[in-house]
Image 1: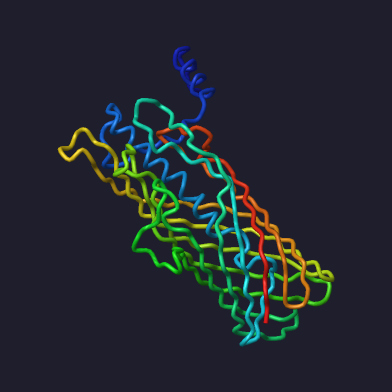
Image 2 (image 1 turned 90 degrees about the vertical axis):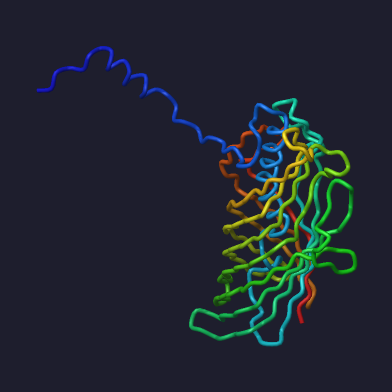
Length: 324
């Protein structure tokens, strides 16, 4: 028989049992000065702002359904479906005038940000199976971003452009199975998207920080839907993977030039759910989308007013489709 624990040891074990589990620690950004300096806090705040922004930008670009308004495919070679979409979500823009004198970065503006997108599906393959009709479509997408809207928000001048709009491009596949009558249509969708570098803040204009990032996204969606008369319904969920190459330029009193630039590697993932409701009349359809980007624990070194980096986010979209 083992001897009883000393009273002091038993007390220590009891205290450990009731202590809360350690929280995830925020990582300091490599290359930023020490946080005892204002320039270090500005650098870290800019890096953390990019961490907040990446999944928001990804959500605006990706949305829910890769081909909104329907879960089905078109399949037959030579058939095309075109979709125009405007997606939106609420965004709180941090104050890029933050100078490191406070712990919390104030909110600059809270606004609904719309992003227009054009989608297309090109039928590749269709085959009748015992369960129903299987189809495979090639998907293409173009996000249209205004350039030079403000001095504080700008798009990379070397980005692909069309008529004064920067282009973010995407491509992918949809494999669908339209089952027998009164059974739903199921589709698996995979998209690869990229967006040119977006810049916030203007160091040359006197802001203490300037931050920018590119975006590369992979979207996977499982959609289920059906049609009753002119009404179409589609719902689904999936996973988004986001990567970005961030750059932070900030006022740095420790350098002779007065400025420093730090590269920030960004990556994250999010679960997304979506619901589409549409009305169809011949080749034309009108639809609306709503959904939720599920939050993910994201510890940051810098607190931001009205910005929860770990919170979930609602999004929406409206648009039209034309099939021929």
